[in-house]
Image (cartoon, rainbow, N blue to C red; front, top):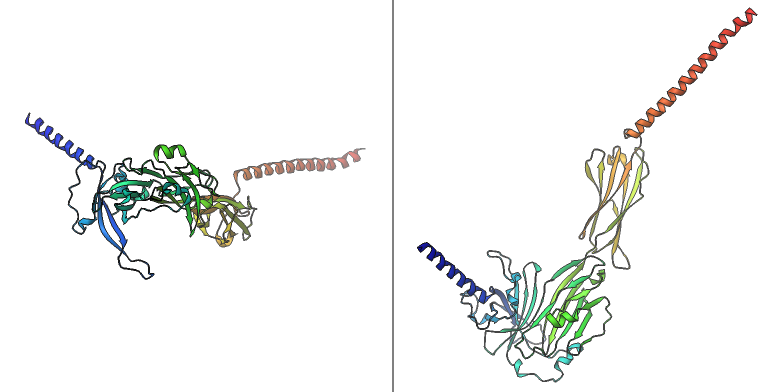
Length: 442
């Protein structure tokens, strides 16, 4: 009985500990607090300072703060007990495996609320008055989850001199890096959440998607949620789900048909009155090559004769491609013949690339024996591709079964013809021998 009582007590304690852990809800997030150093000017770029900081997040503002002892190298003023009702800091992607050296990346910066200058968000601050609600300490937090599972950007508000900020606006993406094939639809995830208790909730929002690649950028789509209008853009084949946007804050971008020109960085920005948060993600269009060998089939080759073969790889992206040749002999052994003579890249109108390689097949020099299978091999980021053609070298290879049967048939026919000719000749000779006797008798 005492054993049962002991087990019951242990179970109650374990449950209590579990409930306590669940109420706090989130693991500790190690960050860097980054800001400009004061007193720097004169047109030079501002020097930056960074300090270690910690975020202890909890979803329930009435729950107790985490009582864990912070590291000794963290200034107490850089420890933030964050109220996060949406549990944005509680994602498993922000919780490292115990003992692992890989950690989520996190940066905290001071944030200054201000009216947006873009026209599709101008309606959010038409009054040009700054509400008293903005008189507080504001921070922005940018976090990258483990293995690119999450990109997060939060704007937090804390009463002056308080280290207990609340998440007011959160923008996140689960597609920090994504690959797609040509012609496929692409979904770039972006979602946002606004604290329902904030005066900014229900005061309107705007969503913007921008594209950047090698220093150049363009506006993909922009939507003013307050006036229910899209901004004029030149982009086609891109859309937002407006119903999901209002219902659940789903601001994901849908590209109807992936093209090479879509590879690059996409930035999802959500505007509230005087606030904004944005996340960036990478899209890469990866298309493996199509291979073709010329001529096909290869002409018959004699020992010592040189046969030229060419392999054309086309329709691939990105640019990097490795071409080579392999030979599989009649004995089944495979060996590498080299890259051959490789041409430069050529770009098609759709942005894909093509490249070719040419190989001189000298049977004696390369030791090709009786012939075999010649294979063009293309190694690409989108996968490996192979194309093969058969090389036949006459005068070296042993006769096939069909050839042997044909030779036997020909031999039998020749034997029959010779036999008939012999019988005919023998009969004629015997007839001629008998004629003189017949004449003498007469």
